[in-house]
Amino acid sequence: MPSMAEALRLLQFGDSVFPVGAFSFSNGLEMAVQHGTVHDRSSLQEYVRTITRLAATGDGVGVLVGHRGAALGDLDQIRRADEAVHLRKINEEMRTMSVRMGRKLAEAANRVIGESLLKKRASESDNLVPVTYPVALGVLFAELGVDEQGAFAAHQYGAASMVLSAAIRLLRVDHLDAQSILFAVNERVDDDYQDIRGATLDDMQGFAPHLDILAAAHQHAHVRMFMS
Amino acid sequence: MTVSLDLVRELAPYQDQPAQLPAAANGKVGMLRLGFERRGDRTILRDLYRQSPLLVQRALYWDEEMPGLPCVMILTTSGGVLQGDRLSMDVDLGPEAQAHLVTQSATKIQEMDANYGTQQQNITLADDAYLEFLPEPVIPFRRSRFVSHTRVRLPTSATLLYAEVLQPGRKYYRDGELFAYDLFSSQLRAERPDGRGLFVEKFVISPGQFPVDRIAMMDRFHVFGNVMLLTDTDRAARVYERTATPVWDEQTPLASAVSRLPNDAGLVFKVLGQETEPVRAAVRAFCTAAREEVVGCTFPPAFSWR
Image: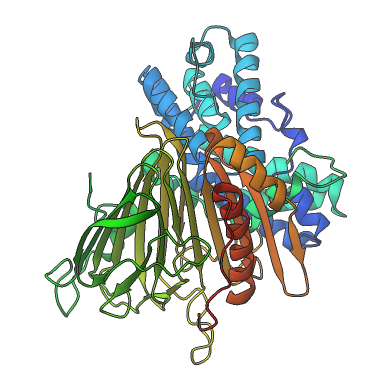
């Protein structure tokens, strides 16, 4: 059992309102709603579940490698994980989201917890590899003494809650619908973790051409509430 | 640099041996080595090595818009990818060389009951080289397992236009075959000649483990076209200008959009449709814009029999 302080750290830094700017992204949902692809509770749940599956097999591996690198104090491994995540952000909006939230998380961590590997990583001179959100999250939780399952779970929760909080503003679903979907989707987290815990950076993958097209089209939308 | 793909994670469940020829036996290791070199106004196929089931005969010069462009058709002597096949292909273009690669017909990844097929491609471009690699669609049959790794190395001045069309299976065979394959895994890694990574795209599709006919993956679509244009930022910007307007056509139906790749590597164009033809037409339109902006020539009309 984690100590109560550890549990609170997980709640604090995994909170959907932790100031990393998650509220300004919809992870493709805005465009999916505009085209009528997502239009009700069941299509929303399907969308959210796809997003969390993609989050697990792609960025989720980055969370674990970042966490393990931090546990070893290995800054090179952390940088390699950031590079691997960044190279796989084929889509411009998704890339922006990952880098922006990564930078914000590193800044917030500096203010809240002070010295950390995340601070070291973010302040590397001639930094050619940007800090990415999933790796930063893994590093931060390792520094806070939260185990990798906890870090992975927080990442999965963040992916789902980002879409769902956007959904409340974009669709006719209420807060309780959103919470029911979140509860149902969260039940998959153990399976997803088991599937990827043995994966390496080379195994990171994601197949979502429909989402890629929605995200690329979103850049050209005239009226947008969200940045993705 | 060829590393065996047998150890990739997604192939772990399929390590059994076929009842026929064992995996990677004689006759199942297809190899191609193609080396292109610029000679005056044209490019020649200077180096050719082949081992069946892959086959290349000779370069032809059929492109009336680019008469100096060697067009090479890649054939397979076994009618597709069979279980236990291990295919590899190395393509090299020297400085200012240009080439156009196609396949003779759709790549049919045949039904499998043991093992899997793999394919490795290495594409190396020198300064100012220009390669079009536009194979016919890939059709993964029921229970097929296939892993493909492609590595591209190119300097900023070179251009690669690489297009793939993935079908869901034999859609009109018997009752229809949609996403009935076991595994389709594809990775493309692009890097600069010094090894610096530009981007990696990897997808592992195993519909039995996680369905793909769902929102955000294939949605209601069946055919997926994926085009990479790796070129310098000026040329990429001109192509982007012409192609950036996203398409969302409920009638056909067809959806497509362009995005800029990481590290100023170029552009990626993705298109989804229910039938192959509209997807191919969209891919072709993007490729035409790319060729016009990069080399200043257009594409001749498509062969009416293809």
